[in-house]
Amino acid sequence: MAHRTDMDDAVHLSTPIREPVPVEGCTTCAELAARREAGRRGGDLSAVSDRNVEIRRHPHREAAG
Ligand SMILES: [Zn+2]
Image (cartoon, rainbow, N blue to C red; front, top):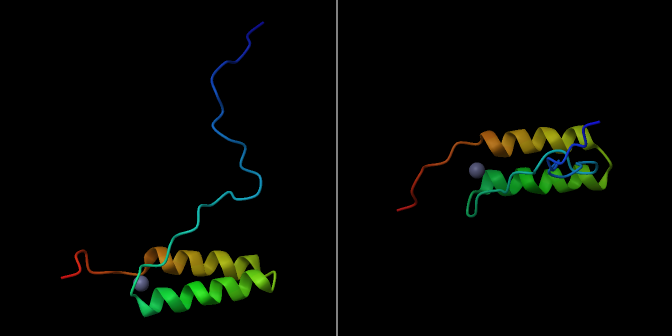
């Protein structure tokens, strides 16, 4: 009889993926974020996750000068 005592961090039921945050001042990210919200409102979750990927992959300059 082994009772498992290691804590399972959290049970991710509703939000399996943490959504990327659009970079401040980036118009492309802002547009993608707006489309993401539009998709969410329309119930199009695959569009939402597509936009998340695009936001995550959008290249940015490291340091704003
Ligand atoms: Zn961006």
